[in-house]
Image (spheres, rainbow, N blue to C red):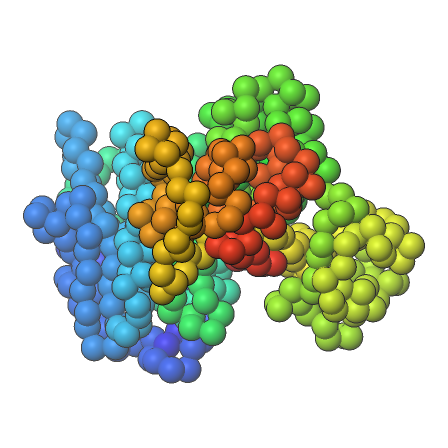
Length: 483
């Protein structure tokens, strides 16, 4: 079907499709407007009063309509509108939830601007006037884009989605009565970041990730990515600090500007906190926002000891667009040749004679061509092994103390720890108990060393002593987001 966007009104003048714009062609389905006439669309998408501020979902043949209706009442007029996305009927629940959430965000911003300055009414009245003046009313006429800022903005939104999902987008506004003034509704296009400004002021921000192999899949809850922002993390920006600042709303925290002025992939957030004179708690929150909105990713600070390997998603084609970008950026160097140095896990210091420019490593990380490897520690108790008979059993008081030290572990884990040879040494057992909170695969060795202020040799010695129940694994950096 054709990918399109439309604007439908309903009120004293009846239900009308006042704007419709096709932005592309998808061959799997027919264009919704060619099958369902404008009058039919207006009737089936008009939300009742019971549907206001609720999820709107309707299936018709091969299409599914998803929206979130809103109403605005202001003295002499009232407005009910519904931002409706037209999807394919077999789309996933994740996709439906994502578009419902986006519809809610857009609708809330429109309500705010409508109450402030009658934003919506004037543009709708202008579109209706242009259609009435035309000899043959055509809601898809190009002159509507030239005259109406709302129509122009809707077409911009359409272009944003054409690149991500074969869906049709329909903005439906049910107007009961209106008087008014509307101005600008604009969209800034990011790689995966939906950033909408309504009336040049109200921001609508949302991240939607579509699975390239299944274009119907979507994800907009990214709290799991933020989990890996730690005090020992460094921030690697995907854009220049100036571009990030430009994308921020006017009401953003002034501390963000100070953070962006000192942030670097070479220093952790504790150092950033000191350099920017911002409390660490606030730095972590600001960093989490940047990671959530895909302005940055959390990495371990760059150093010669860092171990990297070619990413499974690396682009190794000789004549790819990414390879050309790399050659332009780094004086005709070949991306494939550089990636060949990371075919096996390699410490950065071992190839400093080949790659002596840290900006190359930064570029490779930004574009997901390499990933960092870390060593993680796991407690793996042997549940099948019977308890060992130890002739030197601890005294009752010592046994109680041991049990208290390991109270945060499961009974099976606790029993297996106490059966190890190293547990007979009280100092080793106390140190194990203190560090065992990190032995569930959520913290790598470097992070444990920084948080507990212990040298690598001491940590490795402890792991070796309790090797009967501890397993180490070398895994990719957890904090690198899936973009």
